[in-house]
Structures are given as structure tokens and as C-alpha cells.
Length: 119
Image (cartoon, rainbow, N blue to C red; front, side, top):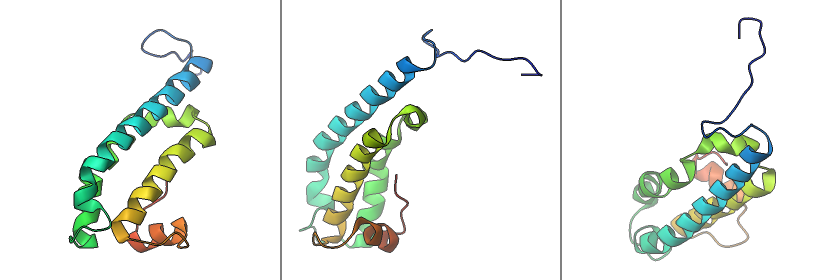
């Protein structure tokens, strides 16, 4: 800042580095667990056998499930690709249920059809 080096620390007093990585990994696992509990509750609304249209299922996903995994997104920068892939797999699973896509349809096609960016 103003030509001086600023030492970055977390609000809790931890030095940035390994502690951020541990916090981000724990955060992503916790979010994955929350999503695993929430999706079965929402399955009747957004699942394969739901009679809602895709135009109604997608906003339901965006207002109920997406905020769970996007909370704390700032910690993801320190997380590795493996941890981000956990949430990406979850998102792909939900999108397959929303559009009732068979397993041979790629995730890229799902994201393109739904006009949603990958994690």
C-alpha cells in the first residue's frame, strides 16, 4: 500500500497460507455436506419426475441451492482444483436432474443449454 509491503492476515489472526487452505478445504466439504442434505428436500420440485418446466426449475435452483455453495466463494481461491471439482460434480448432478438428461450427455452441453457457467 503506497509503496510499502502489507502483511496479509485473516480476521481471526491466522497468517495467510496454510491456514487459508485448511479453512477453504473445510468450508468446501461443509458446503458439499449441506448441499447433500438440501437437494433431496428439493428433489420433488426440481427432480427428474417434476412436472415443472425447466424455465421454472432453474430459478428454483438459483434461489435455493446455489446460494449455499456460493457463500464464502472468496475462500475458493486458496482451494485446489480437487476441492472445486466436488462442487462442480454436485452442480452437474443437479443440472442432470433438472433437465432429465441421460448419462451420455456431457456436462459442457448441459451448461451451454442452461446458459450457466461452470464453477
